Image 1 (spheres, rainbow, N blue to C red):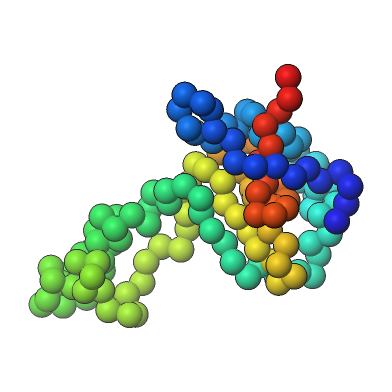
Image 2 (image 1 turned 180 degrees about the horizontal axis):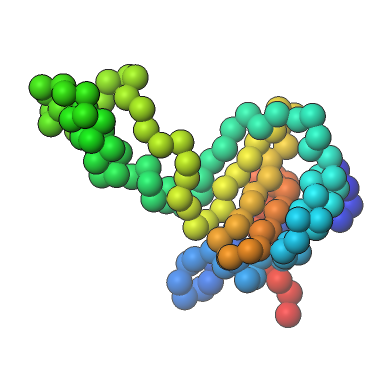
Length: 143
């Protein structure tokens, strides 16, 4: 790994116990050229993403949202049991659903060499990327 990568741990304020984008001690990336430079420094070329995990809620993949999609799908297929099938626990294995993620917290990417990166893009036009060391990637800024 490159020496400029920062290890850290999950940040929680004492009062709210919430993650803080502003307190995460990694550089703020706001330009495509900065992002490309970060990717080069992380040496991820030719590596495969083997796992993606959303740390917070993935809004469009909540059970109620999936059931709404299921209801619409089965109804348009003229399935007479569309109301029963639209219950999440009754979904058929081939039921299609959206593959995008609506999130506002960190995602964790794991590569085929077991490296893990945490990425936060919850602030408009900005991104933060940190490498996980010992399972942690957040470190609070020192004042």
